[in-house]
Length: 217
Image (tube, rainbow, N blue to C red; front, side, top):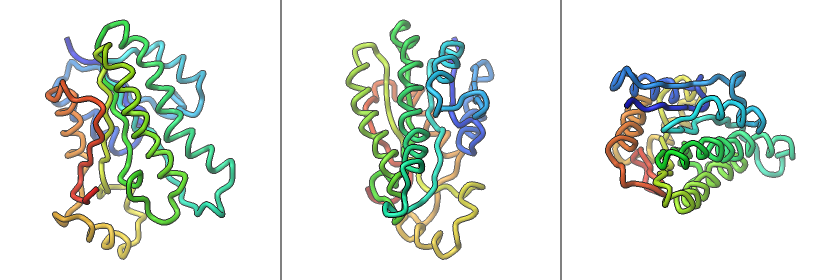
């Protein structure tokens, strides 16, 4: 039976590449990629309603936003917006998706964290805090739901050379690249390949935080 896959942040580059890769591998798969209008991860009631109508075998929490500020210039509204989008929304999506997974005795949740959770650059205090929170969420939820045979993992995709990173100044890109021991960036397709591999082949893997680029963590 083909998997049903729900990817939050469905309009993003990584979400699109992941959906395409899964469908290329199995055209029978059901893949939902809701837009923010369909699934606003900052709205708990929207999450509850959407997840109730879209039970899934694999939940990939890829919705997120980045908006850099130093702590001294971070407002409560800015902090809440970053935490709600990157952390709380992922937790509530997992909570609701887990209802059908526990009933079925199987399921897999993948959180998209960030290298910034471990080595944050200057100015990403809210974003880094939220992404670090996903690491704690992954480990705690893997332990909580392990006996129900629900796997929970997080990946750090790394800096990807795509439309979302095109605004990064050349000098800063070179500085980031210098930290990569292999001297090149990841692509969305490579990350999508790993997500597929993690879900379909590494079936005894749970509670893990996996860095996918060549920066040393």
